[in-house]
Image (cartoon, rainbow, N blue to C red; front, side, top):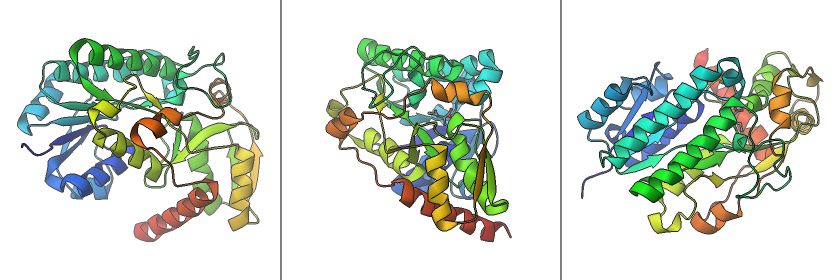
Length: 320
Ligand code: VAH
């Protein structure tokens, strides 16, 4: 049986860099090829093969798949919500054409399995905000959300029409300490930890009571690997699965931080990202993922806060 050969596109990004390391641990360093338009962190670059590649460069992507005899592709490259509002056409090109390249290679049987991340950004202002169901009204009002909703439709089409084994998760805001925030609306929940350690203060670009679904990176990586390792017959949703862990506001996060840093101070100066956040759900119903592939999370707000401070302090020691 041919062993799994994995290509990660967008491997230098927030999720891609940690996903690459985890997949190398599971499948062997040389069986996991990382690629991105720019090099990643030291751990990523030193632990296995890396290739410079633009996710929208079809000949380059196809050449890598041939060269390394790739069986599985994780397409992690995307322009996130905040940045996408500043360059809508570039965001649409990257988020959609990178997906078509991979779906068509899978349709031509040049790869066996695809992972493609969606987001709770597919929901919009008319979606029920509490315990948002798997199937509901979806009128996204952001460029990023529109691209992810369209991508979900195409994934389901390629599964139904061509039998492509593409699997997808609607990530909530993902919090991590190994990479710097990358243009996301939920990234205030990463910046706050960096600023708390640097200055003891943080000015939030979202208002204090902005409730958003969030998840620690460990749980997001676990879910990504769980859904890809699940037997195909268990994957009943071929658009994208709702996934949840916790919901908090900037005010609730600040009070959790104050338990470890009593003098921490937060202020609120909402910017253009407030309208993006206001269009998204506050909490997500992920019972389908729990039922179909036994999903469950581990990190709640308290565990996340401790893990973030511990991780950033280890990073600081490594950098000095
Ligand atoms: C963003 N972190 O803020 C991403 C995420 C649900 C939000 O998709 O754009």
